[in-house]
Length: 119
Length: 112
Image (cartoon, rainbow over all chains, first blue to last red):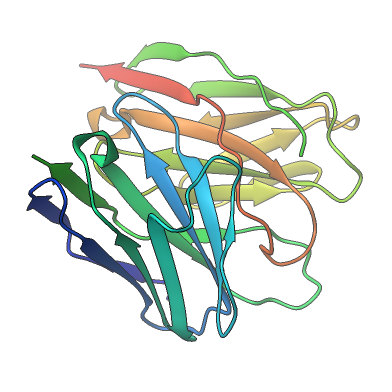
């Protein structure tokens, strides 16, 4: 159980285009999903928290108009990189938590990641 | 969130036991300790989680002293496929309501 998928696994696009990345929880419902970005040889950096049915919460320094997040259902969150530029090239990873009431755990299950290359 | 400190890298050999220690001096009462493994170009994979004393599962053990200011991930009889980056994180109670803050992690290299 606790499988999170992402699509696509990799994408190459031209500068100025927009790219949509999907994150799905396959065998559970996730009221909260998270989006991370990872540059080569660096750690994961939290970009935003995606809440089903409400606006995403962005971390400081992350442009909400550039990285559009939509969490339309309990199993799907999408990240759209608008007007992508080469500096947006990175590895984008989503995660989801299983809502376990009062177990005091903070376990997140991560997707396989999406490699974005902007030419 | 409590800050964590781990060695940047470690080397070992196949068949050995590897222990990676993480310091988290400012851990809060309700914080849990979680370890993740990440291979290149893949998302992190949950390894083990604990609150105190010792936790063991099919892949690793987690040792947490009474003061909880550190923890040690123990990987028994490592193989080449255990070469990866290992992240130690501490996080509050709440079922994962907060995004995780990843440190630099420990790059473990297993040699034949």
